[in-house]
Image (tube, rainbow, N blue to C red; front, side, top):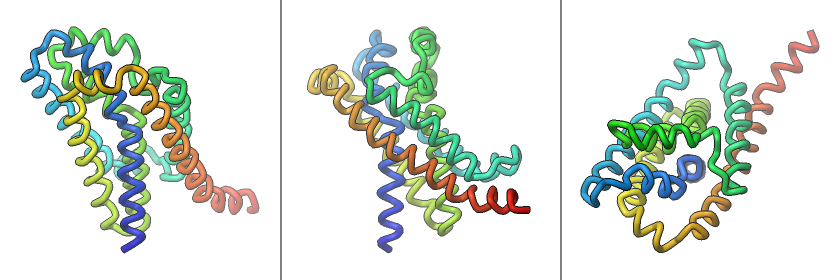
Length: 218
C-alpha cells in the first residue's frame, strides 16, 4: 500500500510540474483578451478537457507506440529525461520553454478559431514534455503492477481539473501573484522538473545498461 501511495505521489507531482497550469496563465490571458468572463470559463473547460484527453490517450497508447516504432522504454526514459531537462532549464531562468510553445504558436493561436485547442490544450498544457512524462509513468506502472496505471490516469484527471480552476480564474491569479509571483512558481517547478528529468535518465540507464554490457561481452 505504501508503494502505491508513493507512486501516486510521484505520478501526480510529475504531471503537475510538467503541465504547470500557473505558467499557462499569461498565455491564457493573451489569447482570451477579447472574451468575456463566461466565455473564458468555457474556453478554460474545453482546454482542460482536451489536454486531459490527449495525455490520457498517450498514456494508454504508449506501449503500442513503442512496439510499432521499435523503441524500448529505457530509451524513451532517457530521451524524455533529456527533453524535460531542457524544459526545466528554461523554467528556472523564467524563459518560455521552446519545447513547450513558441512565440509563433502563441501568435497563431490568437487568431485561431478555437484557442482552447490550439494553443491552450496543445501545446501549452499537453506539450511534448507532458506527453513523454505520462508515457514514461505508464511504462513504469506496467512494469511494476498493472493497477499502478490507475494513479497515472487519476493524476492526469486531477491536474486537468486544477488547470481548469486556475485558468478560469486567470485574471485573479495574475492580480494576486503578479509577474514576480508567477516567476517564483516557475523557478520552483523548474527545479522539481530537473530532478524528475534526471531520475528518468537514471532509471533509463539502469534498465538499458545490463543489456548493453551483455551485448558488449559477446
